[in-house]
Image (cartoon, rainbow, N blue to C red; front, side, top):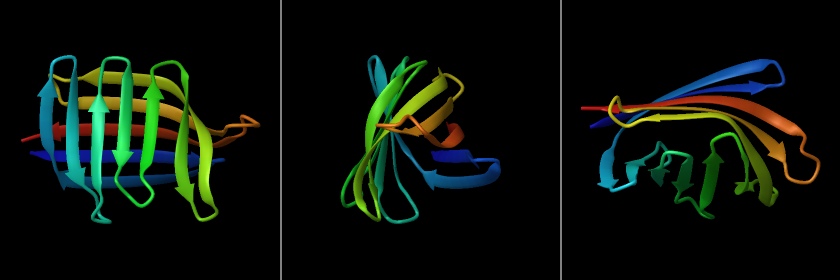
Length: 129
């Protein structure tokens, strides 16, 4: 099975598009399921999906955990060149269609203290045989 990730990143009017494709393992567990793959850097990535929440864990050193709640903000910790930084994900749209193998996610990444928007993201995730 293959997973395709398409991420449109708006950095203050400058648009960058990243497209990636990997072999993926899909693990279904009742109300949630997992998409598990290895990225270009050789790091294991686990995307845990539920109806109202998505958690993406990248097993880097240190580990990166991104959390997205439909229509809400969530605190995340991201390793940066100056150390671990805390941010907010402000999820504008989260749509999961398990039957079609699709996830649509639109969010802003903001500073935790000042709520300043660093970038806006539109991510499409699809998986199929």
